[in-house]
Amino acid sequence: MARIALFLILILLLFLSSVVQHFIPPIEILHGARVLIIPVLLCYGAMALPLPYMLALALAGGLMWDLTSLPKAAGSPDIVFGTSTVVFSFLGAMAHGLRPLFLRGRWEVHCLMSGLTTSILVFIEYALITFHRAGWFWDNEILWRILGPGIFALFLAPLIYVFFWFIVSLTGQTLEDTLESGSFRI
Image (cartoon, rainbow, N blue to C red; front, side, top):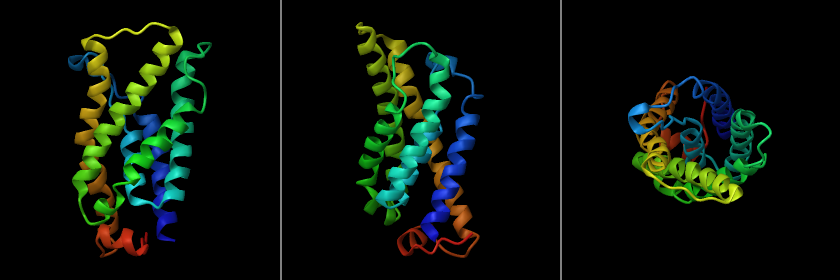
C-alpha cells in the first residue's frame, strides 16, 4: 500500500511538473538552458520504488514528456513518439541500481544521479535529432543546453527529497524506514 501511495503521488507530481516546467523560461545566462523537473522526479521514483513501479513511472513520465515536447515539432519526425519512454526506462534502471545506497539514507546519491540522468536525457535527444538530420553540430551553446539542465537538477533534487521527507514526517516516521518497510501512510 505504501508503494502505491508514493507511486500515485509521483504520477500526480509528474503531471503537474510537465505543465509547470513549460512556464519556466530558458535561462539566458546559460545560453538558453531549461529547468527540467520531470527527470528529477523520475530519478527519485527510480531510487525509492521497486522495479515494476519504476518502470510504470518511466512509462507515464515518457508519455507525458512526449505529449508535451512533440507538439512543438509537429510535422518533424526527428524523435518518434514513445522514444522518451525507452530512454526514461534506461535512465531509471541506472538510478535504480543505486537504490540500496538511497535506502540507507544517502540522499546525495539522488542529487548526483538527478544531474547526471537529466544531462544524459538532453544529450540523447540532441543526438537523435542530429543523427536524423544527418549533421552533427557542436558548440558552447549546445554544451550549456545539455549541462545546464543537469546543473539545475543538482540543485532541485534536494528540494524534492526534502518535500518527500516532510510528507513522511507528518506520519511520525523517517523516509528511509518508510521506504524499506513499505508502510508509507498519507
